[in-house]
Length: 78
Image (tube, rainbow, N blue to C red):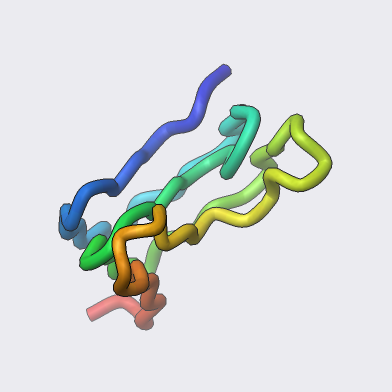
């Protein structure tokens, strides 16, 4: 198993009705959103049963030292 989705370096991603299950990585087991300007919007989507193997690695949102903050938004399905 590995992390399913990475949004980095100012990337933008919209997930509709996608369910990420059983991800595994050192940091951010299912989804990683990292870097200034990076954004993930989830509509009717979920992340579950995913594991970060580093005890400090469960956070899935990191600014990456680029001076802004990544954004994650969860919305109901359309």
